[in-house]
Amino acid sequence: MGPSDDVLTSIEICAGAGGQAIGLHEAGFKHLALVEIDPHAAKTLRENIKSLDAWSWEREYCDVIAGDVNDFRAIPESPDQESHVKKAQKYLGKPLSRRDLSLLAGGVPCPPFSHAGKQLGKDDERDLFPRILELADELRPEAVMIENVRGIKDVKFEEYRKYIEARLQGGWAKHPATGIEEDFKGLGYEVCEWEVLEASDFGVPQLRPRAVLVAIRKDVLGDLKFVWPTATGSPKSVFRALEESMELRYDPYLKMGGDVARLARECLGKWKTEAKKAENRKDFGIAPTLVGGSKKHGGADLGPSRAKAAWSLLGVSGVGVANSHEVGVRKKSQDRDLFRESGPMLTVEQAAIIQGFPDNWKFSGGKTAQYRQVGNAFPPPVAAAVGKAIADVLLAARERDRRKPGPAEVLPGQAGPALADRADDRSRARV
Image (tube, rainbow, N blue to C red; front, side, top):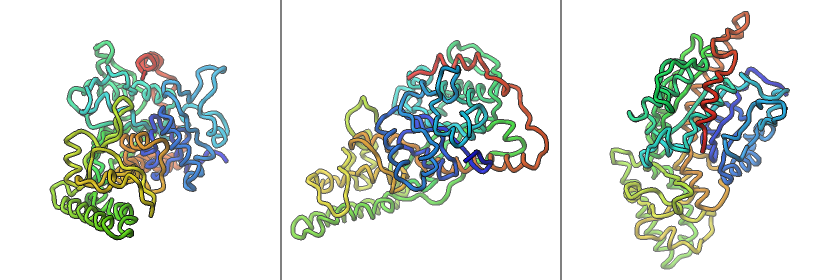
């Protein structure tokens, strides 16, 4: 099999458990590599690609790379180095090279810009914007998509955003390391702005605003226009999202009869009443933002006090995460998981529903590791909407260019790497 103009390829860094990868896959992109440092999340990616029929293309041509993105080699710099993108060579018929890729995507770590953290931005050791800029220079894909928390749009990060934009499309910006204004050559992209998209606008039953940057190579974009996706419908409530799964969790106890069945009926009825009542509020009964937390901080729960209070209004206890549910099976942890006065705790599977994951996507690791994968994810429906908007431009550009005689124009800055800028990225990219 060889490359086709109808196939859109992608590489994703900081892939996590696959939220963005699922959405881009749904939008029509075929993944050549998924890079993720967390071993549990990397195993989640491998196991789902291995078992799901819809991912047969990735089984054949996609490398799941468990490791630090700073060590990821897409295109080796010297003959003695080996690319980490190996399986794709069967599809491409050669090693991956510059301008082969359709899309470079990444949900770079959000703590440097999160309102829940110290907002150190470029001074945070977890800032991986320099690394994705370096990869954009190295690969020169047709498009770049970067996702982060809404906090990146805060006024305090305006200079850093301008620097990122200047690195991609050229222009004046203050260098984050020196504080000196520079005229950057750019990498030949047009930045289609930073847009804040609300997950609940795309059928996700959760308040989860995410900032997304899309940049498209100027020779690809040409006379075309990238159009940001708009809301797909009215918000979906937690009651509608979880009603079936809650009924399935309580069902084994309802069938037992006696006091246990009576308690189960009361608890399920109370949850339904609270969750349904919440649909009449101004937020339509959607969930607060799920938080995955970090390895440094305790086990899994549904967030700080404010988030727990919001979950309480939905009839859910936010003090922890329940053990996994198996249909028709009673659990010894029933009192903790289901029969609390404050309401049932969510399972990882239910948290995944709140995040917009498909039912057949399974998570690896223990309960806390699984929940963190879910809580840190980019909701697949939002990624699908943005991916579809990017795909529309790339496919339209290919159709336009098929009708246009002569070689495509090579813009300044595309013939060779911007060596100074690239070296700067390498020195600043760290974890």
